[in-house]
Length: 282
Ligand code: CAA
Image 1 (cartoon, rainbow, N blue to C red):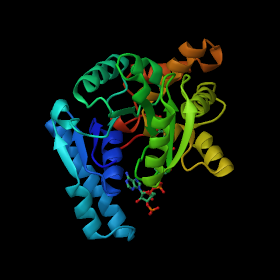
Image 2 (image 1 turned 90 degrees about the vertical axis):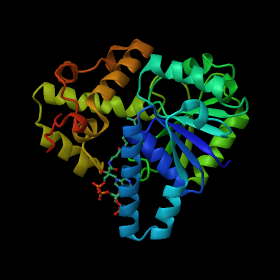
Image 3 (image 1 turned 90 degrees about the horizontal axis):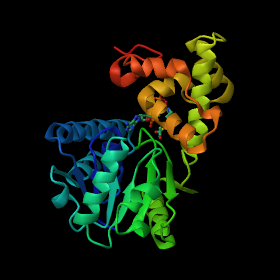
Image 4 (image 1 turned 45 degrees about the vertical axis):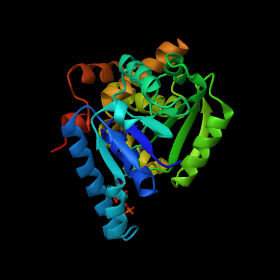
């Protein structure tokens, strides 16, 4: 599998493009915003600089990785003749369904269509295409160049040969693939988000402060970030949206988002991206 297309040049999209390009794939990075494409390339270049400084790649590897990436504002041109599309657009159901209808129309019939969605049903996305057997979840973790996991999600109709291809491909990218089935939150967020929600509820109930909650989990459980710091990193709006998917999907009150989380999102305190969440960012 050589040329791939990545749809969306945000945090996840640029990380995914980085990893494919660094592992010898030609990558069409597609975004309607020219400014977003330029910013993504700068971010990839900066992240490659970290790797050069660390000595894990050479300056020549960096140059080759950047040369493997083509910026493409047009979806139809960007997905033409690629073996795989990885969609990493904003986490919005209507937008993703529209993108998959367009991808189905413009990509070759044999092209595999993967989505990096963190919680939208793969089966639902696949159902708007004429190739549901070739639609699969390929859920990378942030920061993509660093995190080893790719959670691979089989939709109801995903063909086993497609899953096998994506497992092999993920391993060739230096990642560890884990195959799971398509139910709300898959595995990563079904387990992560209730933990984050419980941390927010503990704060809401006044049981401990932000620093104490994060320190308990960092030093007591060896988590690299405490749950509140991680929520800021992921984005509080994203956390809320995933909790709503779990709550609606299972109809179980244990997934109900903490009122403090709802209030913070309503007020625009979204974490790192807005400058303040549980912590303040300069
Ligand atoms: N690109 C490339 N390299 C990067 C990078 C990036 N974007 N960000 C960090 N790095 C590298 C650094 O260069 C450094 O490399 P070395 O170890 O080789 O020196 C390493 O990662 C660690 O970085 P830092 O020293 O700057 O910072 P840190 O030690 O505090 O680690 C972290 C940062 C890797 C983000 C760490 O805090 C961590 O693992 N946090 C948890 C991240 C996590 O849980 N991610 C999943 C979120 S959930 C999700 O993504 C999916 C979802 O559906 C919500």
